[in-house]
Length: 100
Length: 261
Image 1: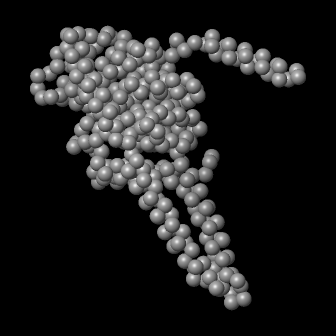
Image 2: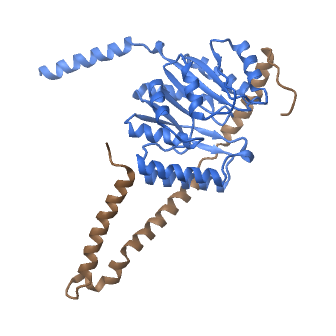
Image 3: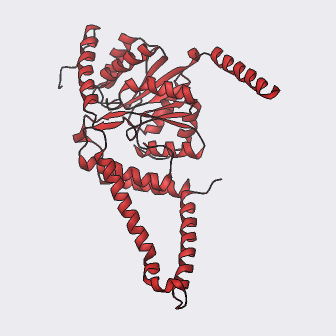
């Protein structure tokens, strides 16, 4: 049985947390070269989430604006509806009187 | 030198056998669940017959009317007398029941080895069915899904907000479930009959979320999925289904599938 998506996410999250915790521990030691960037290391998860957010919004908006408007498909359908009604009527089909 | 030669011979033989196994035995049962589709049913059936007759594939249309008060069934009977009982099969039910049970009900009477499911409200155009069939044959796919989100696919009649919700929900679903298909909530698909049977038996959701569960379970069961771009013409936007309760249902199912598949 394959792992569920939830478990996969939790595993990835745990792996990231482990790496990040190591970085934070290193950065907190004055002699470590990461010490100069301690604030950056601490803020890393927030920065990554922020970057992902920007990516997500960009992708979704791009896809909204490039979502095809199928004008021709609608036109074609309207023509075919008229054609179908005519042909069906010629075959003896009676459309109901009410509406449309 | 021996090995490649043998290989060539055997693949040539296989190709010949496949050619001999012509596709004349294939039949497509098109399931049309209806509820108050009196206006649309004649048109959709006319279009299906128009395109399927031209394609030369064997087919039947199974109309599953859930006791529509507008007389959809009478309209269907009239169409049956025009097109014949071979082509138009009527399998009405007493009252409105779930989509999944409509498929089960329809399949019970289907004589085809492939099942096409589509909406009867003209948002799905039957001209795509022969394209589904062609792609299915090319890759021997277990299911073909029509997709509004790829290539020449698209929608008509949606405003910015509707598109945003659709794209946003799709992005989130792709991120969380990685389903291997771009259109999860679409309901224009072609299935091998046994594949649809095994999927329906596993799916518990209702409404259009049902379609999403079907394709996620398909991936879970390692069925192969092909995609054909489709245009989706929304002619009844005003009455369209996108309220708070739909969004809630969607999120609930998304999380359910996230935790269980």
